[in-house]
Amino acid sequence: MIDLEFTELDPPREITATPSELRTLRRARHGLRIEELGDDRVRVGPRIGYAGTVLLPTGRRIVVMPKAPISNLPELLALAYRAMALPLAAGAAAIDEAIPTDWLLLQLIGEIEELLSRGLRRGYVERRELLAYVRGRLRPQLNPARLPFADCEYSDFVSDTAENRLLRGVLEFLAPAASNPIVRRRMGDALAAFAGVSLVRPSLVAFDRVAVTRLNAHYQPSLRLARIALEGAGVHDAVGASTAPAYFVPMWRVWEAAVASALRDAGIQHVHEQPEFADRFVQQGGYPKLRVTLRPDLLIGYRGTPALAIDLKWAPALELRYGKKRLRNQHLYQLATYCAALRCDGLLVYPEMEDQIDSMYEFNGRTIRIRTVNLATPSLADLRSFAVNLAEKMAEPGMRAG
Image 1 (cartoon, rainbow, N blue to C red):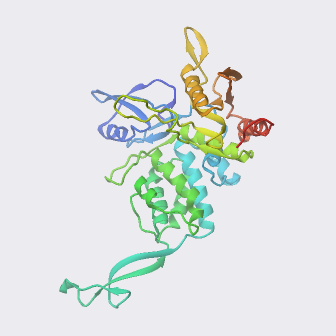
Image 2: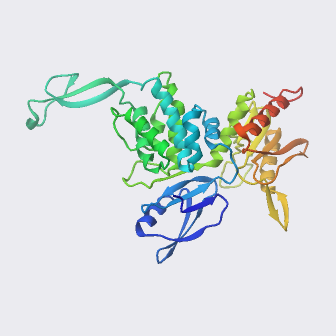
Image 3: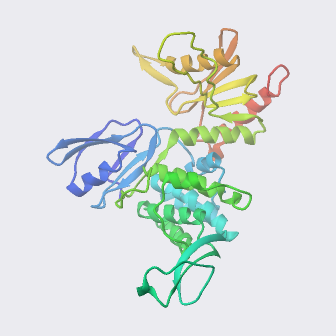
């Protein structure tokens, strides 16, 4: 049951909350705007850029839907994070009744199921135990009360590896947030396969410690999705024991990653995500000494001679000013700076919300194009068509495609 539903652009609403509900809402501030008014009254609203849900202890649920119409968000997530697409037979029924909490969880479960079909990776894990026999290295027994047991250190070839611990920890942590029965059942099946893996409290730092090698490279899509899911739940470290059954998808990151993947699928090479340029603004004097860094969302071509700078905005393309709809000048100024500093053309891309736009401007000898992409088309047809058309444009003579 959904008691309060928003889109990202909706204004906050005032509700009454019990003390336990208020504690849960405080822990969901990463996806919601919370203003405590006193006397059990709370003003709750969406935080722009996030879609998701929070389940309150009393059973009430607050849901935030994406502000752009999307025909199939799990498909967009699959494109964004390069995960396996969900099987239609299992995915269709689940998607029809799913709320934002379940979208990325469903995709994560699908990727883990693909991983389980190949078998959990096993590796050597250092263990220390009191045994009735000697195994591995024998440590000096400093506590006579432990005799006749031997204090042993040894390496065991088991599935209790760091990667598997993280995946199990994320599934266990997010399980209370799953509201769809199909998602809960598939999550339970996936967790059963990790029965022999130690339960740890996941953290973003733990993900940074996992080294990806050729032996565990097939874990990379699952680990990436698990990390995104953990970030969506507002978890940054492993401190504390209480969690809110809340989950929010960072939609601007999904949008940026999906466009980058669509461009690569269309055959465009040298697509760089979030490249940094710290040498274009040079401080000539004064103090303090500060560095100015440029970081376009996407760059096509070589860093030294790029062909196109792309800025992706998860926002409406037009805004209402003085009673008329106008372009968002601040977005154009930002892209124009990239074009001037990097000496390349520019492309500003928005998800289509209300207005369809495809226009082109000349700026200081450079071409700047503004385009909306309709994510409501089946199979993300407009996004893929946009990527194919751009690939054809980049292949034309005279374009520095890198």
